[in-house]
Image (tube, rainbow, N blue to C red):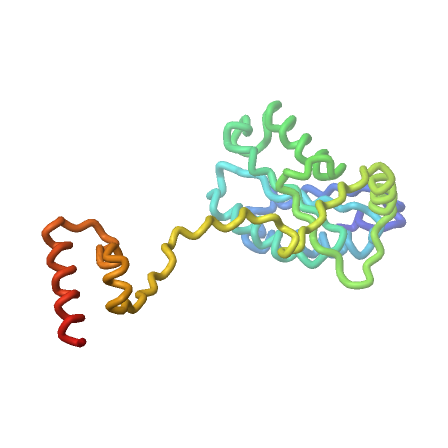
Length: 226
């Protein structure tokens, strides 16, 4: 804690803090409070530095759920700090400990790679946590330079296709109507019947006997009316 001063460290570009694992037996659940105080001091003393806080590593002498709950509390407490980034070591397990407490050779390699990736911000899919900056926050030097370099190399975004107005969209023509035209019945007189008996024939197909019957009925009605 006493080393986190500008008169001791100057004005570094990156700061990596890994602590708390050996304090589990003495501080227990107060470990998260101690690490949060350290993160707040680092954020306050070095506003232009990228500060990486390494969360607790697994140990065989401490239940995994206890370490997990402490790491969750650390993440929650550091969420409001602008330049604090968390490195979570979820890819390290008990198989990476040579005595149940300290990392073996393979564990050190995995541990170092996670810290380096988070510090250099070169793995966007890592489990590093970047807190949202508060209002009126001025980004540190390394962030401003990276934003300028990234913006100068970004390709131009493709133009979206022009939207078509609904009235200009071609639609297929409507199918032709197959409805039969309405049939208008025409009133026939006696003269028209006698001059053109074919009008008495029905339009629909009918037997010969039925046609003769209808003609006789029509002639009888006309004779009675005269």
